[in-house]
Length: 144
Image (tube, helix red, strand yellow):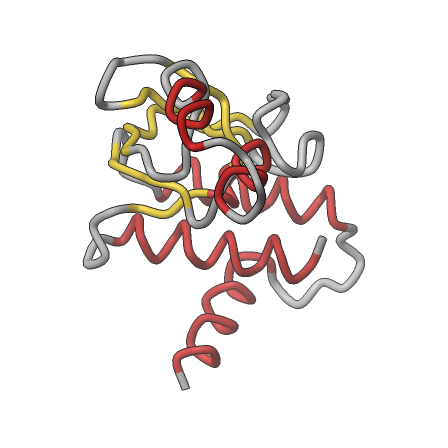
């Protein structure tokens, strides 16, 4: 039932127009999020970022991982989502060139990064932002 409600929310954003290609749909979703998100808001990673996989699931050294997390974004960090950009690209984005860019500032040290919006979730599960970001991430991952 929850999935049906999510599908209906996504369809209300993108419409039933099957003529939209993926890039056009991302732009439509971007416009919707620009007018709907309440920023700034606190976010964190949904799962490990690409560079972290070797440390989280593989043989990567814990000390090296702890050192790298000081200068690189980690999915475990808390960020302030400051803005989104449909044209932005960054080496930190898993789906660079496809995903919406998320301008974030890490709360612990104020370092700024450009991450993929589909890789983030709002920390306040009761907020509208949580639903907006979750719906986008589900749609993006299932349709790319």
